[in-house]
Amino acid sequence: MPSSVVANMDYDEEKSTLRITYTSGAAYNYIGVPADVFDEMKAATSKGTFLNYRIKGKYRYKRIRQA
Image 1 (cartoon, one colour):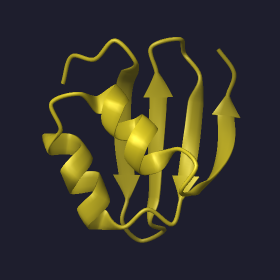
Image 2: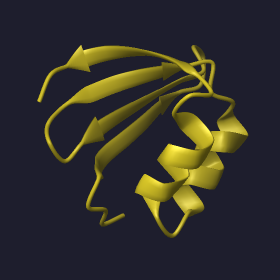
Image 3: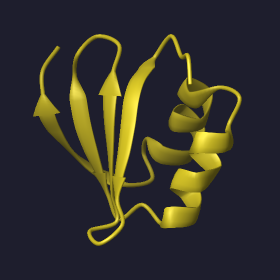
Image 4: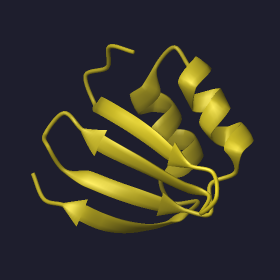
């Protein structure tokens, strides 16, 4: 999963929460993300592009860690 934007991503199916850790070190929880959207992101060629078009601005988020 090499990405210039996304260092790591984890999904909590029970809470429908997607945690993204950016290459900058910042980490965010995106809330209410369906499991199928996470599956699509795992399969996406560009994690950063997918994040920008399918996650950001569509789901609430909470910053977990600053860069």
